[in-house]
Image 1 (cartoon, rainbow, N blue to C red):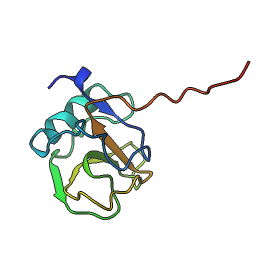
Image 2 (cartoon, rainbow, N blue to C red; image 1 turned 30 degrees about the horizontal axis):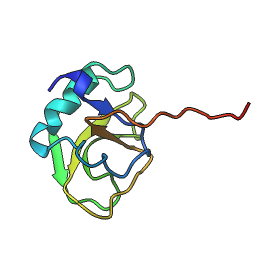
Image 3 (tube, helix red, strand yellow; image 1 turned 180 degrees about the horizontal axis):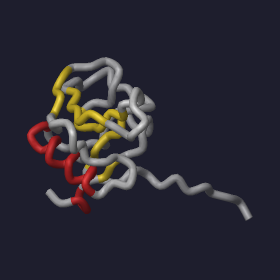
Image 4 (cartoon, rainbow, N blue to C red; image 1 turned 90 degrees about the vertical axis):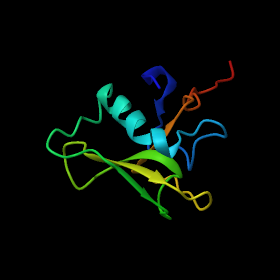
Length: 111
């Protein structure tokens, strides 16, 4: 898996990756670390061990995502994988990691 194959979606933009674009649980930690390494927003956690948290949450996006830890001011995060297949939430702190880019946010105008 290389960074061009991975995309960090904006927080709150999706409840889960589009069909066929999810990062498998076995690849989630590596995918997240690759994106963090190339990110201007999230920074590597030099003072903490980066690990994958796996759970069946009811307040997060399904699948692989970065959770922005808003309790700190240094853009800290958790690398998570939600095993749920229903009840996914596009919360304002969950950045889904997908293998396709997010849709364009272009504004269409009539001229």
